[in-house]
Structure formats: structure tokens, C-alpha cells
Image 1 (cartoon, rainbow, N blue to C red):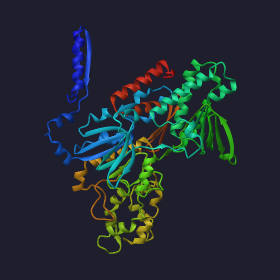
Image 2 (image 1 turned 120 degrees about the vertical axis):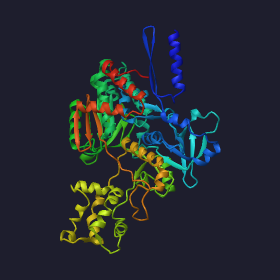
Image 3 (image 1 turned 135 degrees about the horizontal axis):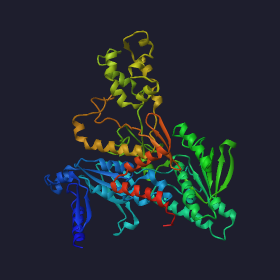
Image 4 (image 1 turned 60 degrees about the vertical axis):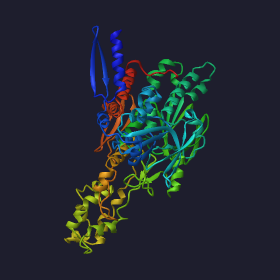
Length: 587
């Protein structure tokens, strides 16, 4: 027992003093081995030797950064912010980060909800930056006075002060988005969504409830068929993955527990477009539709849901002249895109963006019209400037001798700045299989005739079509995470870049921009299709489909967890499922 008492003291010491360097201790006690591990934070040890500042000095030196949201964007910003000159206040109605790509797995018990969440306070306590967290929802943003109005959660409201106000020097809006119902009647009242961990847990309970109700002896066969009809509205990645996960759950686990109703189960996937997974390569779309047909998942394309009642879904069949048909169901999942949160709509009206769907930012992720407010993730989109809007300013900046024409040398001098400032240029060159912007000159009449200089009209002709390649970034966790990392790096280097700007030329002003514009790097995307098969679309237009892609999916989603604890829990859940199957208890 003394050995265990010693181990207990050592374990408490590791937890109480996280600044101790990483170490693995093996203690032999009566022929047995005990292992203790501590995760160190060397930056904390360095910070402890820094001079201690008084509260007044800290207040005078530090800028206050308020982060709204603990999703992919907000958490990535927090994890990568290293500059101790900031005081950070994180505000969110949930006190954890959720690994949302595995939410469909949670709905069917393949992965437990606890395995994909990481408390924000765990992340914050390992930072050298001063971080405060408040579990509350934002009600209003006052950009003029640099204040935000918040309301604490009811269950945490112990002192009767429900609402409070927070000042900020910089505001990071990373609140994500709501589900877009397109104002379809009955969707909010009767459909399930899959945006939060609570949604996945609710779906899991509802699926089990459907099987339990259908197994009651007093239920008619017709009612059993309705109860066991699962409808999925939306043929995007979330809807397809949930339909595949539900099919595996039913056919691998539930049929063994409910043999009397196994032949009555039906899964229908409704998509208003012509195909499911429209954002993927056509090869993946075709394979997914064929696989679902083989598996018995009913895919109805060209079906627009116009109304949902407690027991029926009304769809307009676009392929049959708009005929409206009804379909009984037991459970419905709605997964058709994202919508704007109410307080974001109010903020958009304040800054003159009332007619937009989401917040518009510049290429440095600043909300247009608000220098101190940044927006990242699903709640915002980058309003990329068009080359043709700035073509005259670009020409004047390049024409250093004010001759009214550009020499090849003058043209080449601004090529890199143009490509960095306007990403659509590189996309256009890639689509035309051109090596660089010099190749664009060959398409202009004067250069093709041997002229060594360009006038403004030739310059316009050379760049006239590049804006056709402008595209909005997808509302995915991958984009949000990269935006959070980029913005944190900007804040880490804010003072250095004020003195030594590293961005492209200011074509409409003097000098250079402080930072390089944000650039999204697509790392690929996955579409799990059930049966241990996954479709992967990777950079370079490489498409992989099958069991090998499933193992790649396992490895990527394991490595992307925010902590080793999450990695261990997720892998344990997968191993448990392989050995004992999914948990079908209603908890």
C-alpha cells in the first residue's frame, strides 16, 4: 500500500506543477511497474523567470482581445496565439471544442461524445497568454464603442446577473452559423439537426426510440413501417455520412437486437440537386450513388422539401414538373447548409452589410468597415477585390517612369505583388496551363506583334479574364481552422510587421500591407460511405475510393484531435466497436 501511496503523491505532483519538464517515471513496487507521465509546457517555465509586473503595468501594456466562439476558428486562434502582450477573453455558450467531423459517428455509437470534446479551460491553462473564459452567449456587438453585450447561461446564473458587458481592443467573431432551414414550414419543430454534440446525442436516442416503439406488440405493421423510415434531407457530406453510418448501425448491430422489425427499416436521402456530393469529383458522386443503391439506401434527387409535419414530409419533385408528393417518416435529419445567427444579422446592419448572407471581410479577415473587428469561420466570407477594379491603380504603381506604358521589366517588377494580392490570377494561370503572368502578355495584340511595351488598354486586355476564377471559400472546419491559425500568427507578429511590413504593395496607397493576405490551402476532403469504405479527394485531383481510404480517414481524423487524450479515446472507441459492436443502449 505504501507503493500506491507514493504513486498517488507523485501523480498529484505532476498535476499540480505542470511546468515540470516532460518526463516518464517508472516505479517498481513489489515486482509491479507503475508509470507516471507529465505533459510539460516549457514556455511556462520560461515565463516564470520573467519580471513580475504590477496590475497597473499589465493593464497599460496589454491589449484586450475578445474571442466569440469555441469552434474550429476560435479554438485554432486560441491554440496558436503566443504573444503574451495580449489579454484574451473567450466567450461562448459551450465550454468545450467539439471535433465536428465525427458527429455522425456519435449519432450511431461508433464514437462516444466524450471522446471528441476538449474543455476550453484545458487548452487555456497551457497558454503563456493570459486567458479568461466566460460561458455565455453574445447578444449584441457595439463596434462604435467597442463593447459586446452577453448573457450567461441560466444554469450558471447564480447571482442574478444574467447580462454583462465586455470591452475590447480587438474582437474576433468566430461563432459559426445556424442551420439554414430556408424558412421551410415545420422543419424547426419536427426535424433533427447535426451541428452540436447535443444534436448527435439526441439523434442517437431517437433512433433507439424508433426501434423500441416499433417493437411494441400494440403497433400496427403500417405504423411500424412509418416509425422505421429514416429521412435525411440534404445530399452534402454531413447528410451522406449520416445515412451511411445509420445504415451500418442498423445492419451490423440493431438487426441482431430487433430481429422482428429488421425487414421494415428504410433510409431515404433527399437532395434537391441532380446528384449527391456535388462539391466532390464526379467519380466520387457516381460511386456514392451506386453504393447507396446496392446497400438499399433510397436516393431521391431533384426532390425539394417544401413542408414537414409530425409524420409526413412534403416534397416537390423537380423532375416531374413540380408535382408535390408526401412521404411518411419516423425520424428526419435536416442538413442543407448554414444560416446566419440573429446577433450577426444585427451587426451586419450596423456596418452596412444588411443585404449579405454572412459577414464580409477583406483578405486580412477584418470585417469591412471595422478595423478592430475580425471574423473567421462559417459566419464570414472573404470579399476578394477584383483585379479590374484596381487595374488603373496597378498600372500607375507599375509605371515608375510615368511614361504611360509598361516595359517588360516594369511589368515583371509587380508580378509577384499582383499574384499575392489577387489569388484569382494564379487560379487563372493554372486553368490556362500558363507558367507565369508573362505568358498573359502573349495574348495581347501589341506584344504578339513584337512590341516591347504595354499601354493601359493592353494591360487591361491581359488581365481582363482573371476575375472569372473568383470563388468563395467553402464553409468547412478546414477553412475555419486555417483562418484561426493565420490570424493568430498575425497577432503574434503585429508589432514587428508594423515596423517591417511583409505584405504586397498597396496599389491604392503608399508602402506595403502589414501582412500577407490569407490564403486557403486545400488539404483534401473525405466522404465516408459506410461498409468500411471512404471516398477521398486529395490535392492534385487525386481521387481514392475504398477500404484503403477508410484507413487514411482513420489516421487523419486521429491526428487532427486537439489533445492526446482525445486521440486515445477515439482510437479506443473504434477498437471497441470492431470487437463488441456499437452501443445501442438509450442513455
